Amino acid sequence: MKMTHLDENGRAIMVDISQKFSTERVAVASGTVKMQAETLELIRSGEVKKGDVLAVARVAGIMAAKKTAELIPLCHPLPLTSAKVEFEFVDETMLKIIAETKTTYTTGVEMEALTAVSVAALTIYDMCKAVDRGMVIGEIKLEKKSGGQSGEFNREEYTF
Image (cartoon, rainbow, N blue to C red; front, side):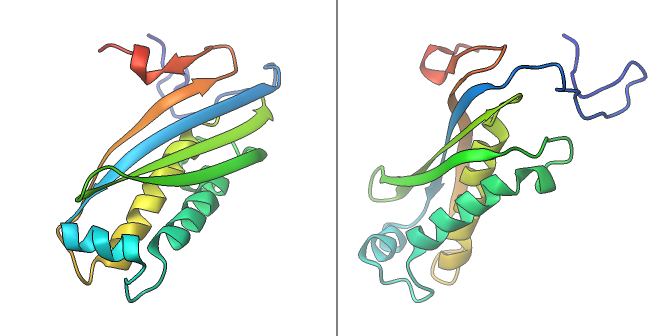
């Protein structure tokens, strides 16, 4: 398999997307933060001393999606048309983060969705670390994507 971010001499390059067509592209990523039940209850009840953890993490994730090209060296800056971050209480110790990003452009938005999840998770850790330094951020992954030459990806249909 040819690596698209390397030239013929093995040097890092930014992929040339000038000949690609603009299409609507959507990506959904997810991740988890596992913590003590008491910590998750503080988040749920809005009693974390630093403030509304989920509201701050949501804004942090959206901001991160918009700045992905500044954080990941070979990513193209994209004109995002939408960035959303949502949360699910999985059980008494796990919070799931889901990010969706959209654009109509010549390259995909997977990295933006993954970055949004990552920064939202780090924000949750930062806001709650005073009460629970043992939190574990994990399972950050692309769930699905659509648009572009590579077509659809759906994790439910993916096999290793």
